[in-house]
Image (cartoon, rainbow, N blue to C red; front, top):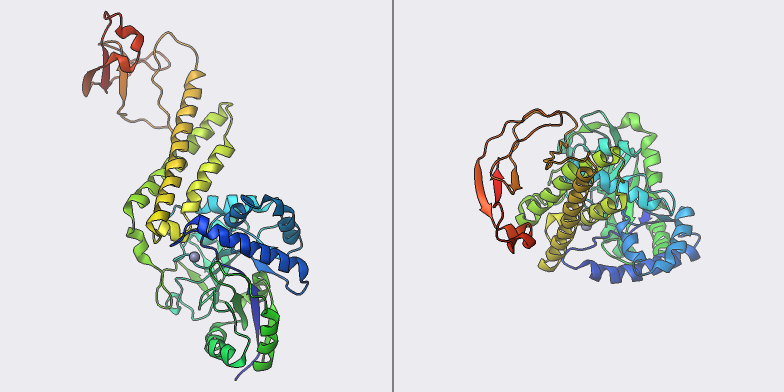
Length: 455
Ligand SMILES: [Zn+2]
């Protein structure tokens, strides 16, 4: 067998918060796994690294029930042993908007800060395809490296697993693809026959496709506890494959080697949704349309209505409610995890997803009304009723607007802030129950009817 590759064994676990199981089911495993991980990292100098799946929602789920372990996590992150972030959740990249992807990174990186530095790799080991614009978003956060599995084949322009990936604005990241997935090194057997059966074929595929011959063998899988006997396995690997160098490593070390050989790498552009070697689950685009529609509506409400309104209010001197916005974002970002928004979960999980969307939408609707009221209440006082339009586009607009007014009058005039008459016509008018507006006056009987005008 030919020669000389370095095999980087990186301990990790991939964390689907929910899928065919609920978040509460996975949280129980998480509490157990985390204790093992922390204990091993603290006690064993040689057990150098553990990658916490590139998402901080795992930590949030953990600290919600084991808050007393924050100092232990902080110490291990500071020591460079426990590797956290940069995402908040393991997001889908083709069903959610660019703004959602960006917020996922923003909140993830922020959540890392009390503990230490986030992993500066766009790490999406399981997401079902990669959006073409990811390098642009990564560069915006100072991230110049990405590691993923699904969607790539030689049909994109190289048969190598390392390449430069460029988005349409020219942003670039160094990409490392996991051609056989993130779990090829899970529960490695300790005996020669078992190891050969697993790895003989894998090594050949990995080495053939590698420019640098720096091979990744991620040691972990979905929700799996860490492999306690990994050093015994590594000793055996050294016996069986003397031409290969086995090290416990973190992903950054592999990228350091790749970046040193940038001149030998191909440059690829575009999205990765090729299913030649792995499933990319394109059918997730049409699963559970009720959830997909709710997702699109709420994402649109927050990004295109509420946040511009909040910014407008802030420029007028009102508070920008970062905490409320973060909470509603985090509710929907949990739903943006690949299995969750993929809607390939159990019905019970889909109900939980729906309830997070309901919570976020309720928050968004109420905060929108709050900001509109605040702004209107603080306008100059006037004897007349106010009809206020909010232009949430970043440019002036002149257009016909449809709206509905409720008035205790049969006639009215609209005037702008300079007293100029604004033309309108009535599309429909209805008399409405005055009790809807003022129950008191119903008792007196003698009042002008209330009318609702569509103008
Ligand atoms: Zn997954």
